[in-house]
Length: 159
Image (cartoon, rainbow, N blue to C red; front, top):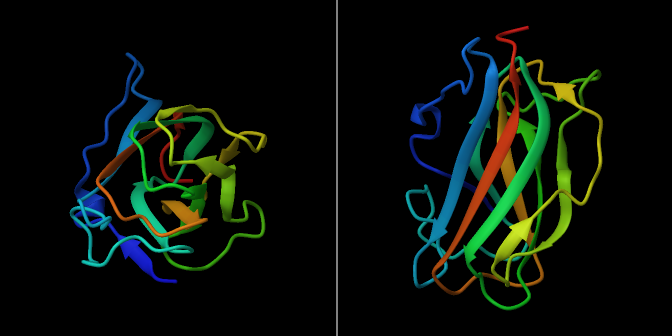
């Protein structure tokens, strides 16, 4: 099991979606090449069974409401995933514990489709920056694929 991080993860553009400037909706993409490796990442090897992929950074002060997963090009047969978050500084929070399965425990990435959360949590406000993470299971990926994660909530600013 390895940890894969998208390159330039902190340079992804951030924007608000309403006139007040605090509604937050961001699309985070994970694409793989023909060998199954994450494009624009720090690893050249294919995403393996049990790997954690850091797809983006959720900002401190974000109140998380919902997520939508869109698999437009399916991953290899049997590939499933958990979707959650882990704090960038590696230190958990007693008030808002990190969770590798905050949104989903077993999305079937081996089929194209739109995926709603399978875990139902109350809205939380992140006390610090957190990686949006995907943890694979079932099989290693061995083909070109694409997953987009759409996170939405309210950006309150640094707590």
